[in-house]
Image (cartoon, rainbow, N blue to C red; front, side, top):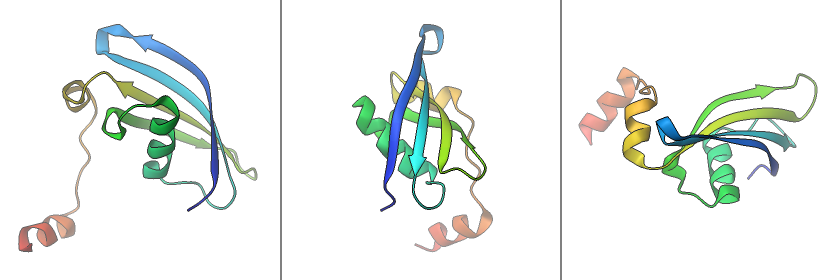
Length: 100
């Protein structure tokens, strides 16, 4: 696994949408970590479930091994499903899932 260091810079409550805006700085060694890796490290540092975390952006700093992360942590999974944009699944993946 890629070693990465996540520091939470700022959190802001958004009570109308039942979520918190989290801004964090990320330092890594090799390539930019995937959204899944960032979600797991962010959820472990905030002590929340991974299903409640939604990454909005990972802004890379060119030439440096640093990035800025903007994420939302929701109060419950229903609110996240209602607010967050749906992820489109490619046709090949749908066909593979249908065969199984």
